[in-house]
Structure formats: C-alpha cells, structure tokens
Length: 470
Image 1 (cartoon, rainbow, N blue to C red):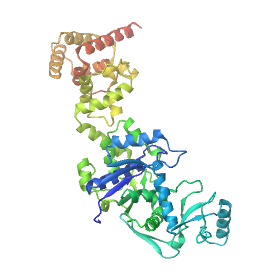
Image 2: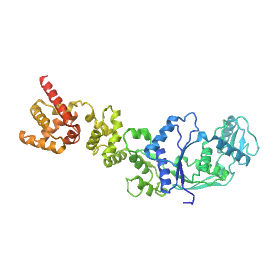
Image 3: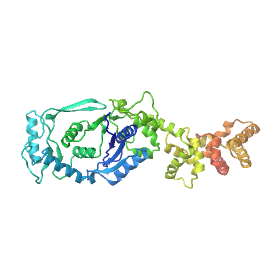
Image 4: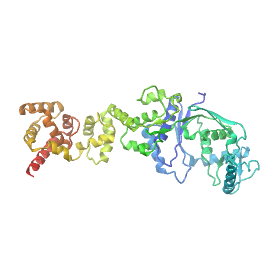
C-alpha cells in the first residue's frame, strides 16, 4: 500500500444496463475505497454515441443507488471531457511523444496481410513515426511506443505481468474522425481524477501495458492494478441469460433485497474463511484484495435465493410491508392498508424467498379468490356442509378474532362435534384461500378479519350446495 490516498472508480458504459459482472466490479471498488477511508468515483464512459443511451445511463445510476453503492465524486461523463482530451493530445504532439500518422486503412490492411504472409506479427510498421507530419484529413494520432524493453506491472490479484514492447503497435490515441480511443480516454480520466487503484475484470489485462505506456508518456503516477476473475455460471461457462437474469434491476423486479445481491456479489471471487453471510459493515471492515482469488467466481441462483430468504426473515415486518406494497400493486391489488400488508407479511415471511413470491402468496388476502380444482374437489364436499355451517355460526358469534380467541373457538367446536381440528381446518383453508396450502389457519383468519372470513366461508358453503344440486 503506497502513501497516496486510495481513490477507486467505476466507469460503466451506457451501451446497456448494469449487469452482474459490472455490479461486482463496482462493489469491489466501493468496498476497497470505504475500507481505506478513500474516495469512490463514478464515471460514465459514453463516448460510443451510437450505442450509449440516456435510458441506460439512468438505469445504471438507479442500479447503483438501489445497491447502496454511493459515490464521492461524479458522475463524470466522458462525452463532456473532449476539451481535456484534445489539450493532452496537443501536449503529447508538442513533446514528440505522439505523432500524426497519414497511413490510410487500405495501406494498413495491405501491410498487415504482408506481415502475416511472412510469419510476422501484423502490427503497424512505424512508417510515419519520425516524419514530423501535421494534421490532415484521415490522419490519426499515434503514441510513440518504446521500440525495446518490457512493460511490467505487479497485478494485485494475478502477480507480475509483463509484455515485450516490440509486441505492441504505436497505439492510436485519436481516430481520423477526431474521436478518442478507449485506452487513451481512460488514462487521461484516471490521471486527472487521481485514481490510485484500478480494480476491474480480467478481460482488461491486455489493455494494462498499453495504458501504462500512456501514463509514462504523460509523466503521471501509475495506479496499482487488480484484475478480478471472471464470473461463471454453475456449468462453468461464462455467465449469461441462460443462467438467470444478468441485469441488476431484473433482480430488484424479481423481489430480491439489495443486500442479499450485494452479499452474493461479494462472494464471487472473494472470501473470508468459510463465512457466507456478511453485514455491509463486515464487508467494509474485512474486504482486501489479498482475499480475491485467481479462479473464477461461480454465480449460483439457488444460493442467492436461500440467502435472500434469510434476509427476508431477518427484516422488520413494517419495512417488508413497505417493500411489498409496490409488488402487490403491480399484481392488481388496490386499497392496501399498511396494517393488513404487515399482517400478511408476518404469515408469509418464514417461507418466502423473494418479495415477488411473497406478493403472489399474499394475493388471497387482497383479491377475490377462486378455488383450485383439486383442492375444492378434495375438501369442499357435501358431507362437510353441516360441520362448516356450525363453524360459521360460531365464528359469527365470536367477540374477538385474535389467534388465541380463534384457538378457543375451534377447540370448543372440536369437542362439541367430536371431530379433530384437521377435519375442519383443510376445508376452511380452501374456503378462505382457494388453495390447499397456506400459512397457519389461525394466522390467516386473524389477518383476513372476521367480516372477510364469514363472507368467504358463506360463499364456500353456497358453492358446496350448488355442487350437491348438480
């Protein structure tokens, strides 16, 4: 660790939404900065004018906010920094570290083909390097790469990486249309923003020597580099849509809690002993690049679901109710009261793995029900009419409708009719929920309330009677 302040950055490109891989990179940069009381910078790399969209930019920022990955500076936009890039290009040209190249695409392609024919590396031959050419239509600006020696760096994850300079082209910094190349813009931004640690996916390893050479030409301090292992699906192939959603906001829409996703992302390529579950404070305290592995992280949807279920069970009922209301609204529920939603949450949270699953399971509390065919055939039978009518009478006479009062009513009813609770509980469950499986019968009756219980039981009794008349 050097003595410079730790400054990390996350530079997404708004050519798409924020995906799992990008979110993991953002998280590791954020954790590293927070661990060292440093700064975390957000920079939007929107120079690809044809594919970058405002909608994707907004989705990326929304995803970051949902995950709780706050930034100390930014968001900066590369599209607004063209003057800075032009200024630095002029400095490099003036100092003789860069030059105008007039070789056209056809000439370059012909030279590449000739080099390959002779078994040589198809790289630019440096024709314009020392000609002192000026600006011209179709010209590009290239960096003068050292013709010998090696460029080496200590990757904080992978160890020492080096490349012979003679393997590299004289890099293009500015294209013929005036736009700037990725490697050039990134280095200018990182140096101007004081970035001291570049933590990114290992698909960028090949860019690093090139970027270091640009740093050297600029005379700027070179950051420390750490390249993170790939993320794979359970079948060990690169993570893709067939393994589940890859967009962060899709996980929000599926009803995952942000911290459950963060926790899972933290464990993709990083570990701390055998610990699987971390608070955000623990992640900040424990995170270090020394614990980032060299092998790929495996994204496991089942593990994420289990973890999300654990966080749901730990969450306050009132907080869960507030999170659940938008899901219920999307499923067509209206006139929702926080009190009733909180009651529903209390009955469903022990088994729910996502908020969407919980909302779907809660629909019988807030919408009209229909009887599942198998359930009604098995439990809403004419021979149970007398029992259900007797129970309806007792429930109408109830002076309280809490779980203890309901237990007392049912106990008394069972003794009087000499039947076991199970005989009446299942038909009643189908009458109240339309299904044969639900949370505890007394729990759901308390949440539904006396008026709704009486209404639904009466409807079920009428339904059994019409069945008997068929």
